[in-house]
Image (cartoon, rainbow, N blue to C red):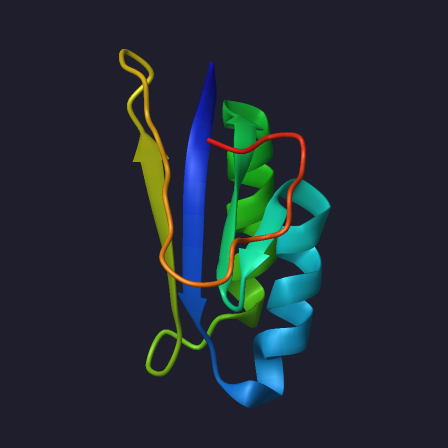
Length: 89
């Protein structure tokens, strides 16, 4: 099954570059610590498996939001518009 995800993180500076690099392999980088894009269940499982060893559960947080597939989701912003790319919500 495929789902559209928004992933946000709060990671210690020591680990943030590694986490960021892995997320960029799967999702589009939107803004600072925000990524979004389509993931198959297998890709999501692989992504979580790769991130887990990097995360210090006492200090770090990675949140995955799966957006509903049964409706139209629109995004909007305030301020400078984000860069354009192919898989915008």
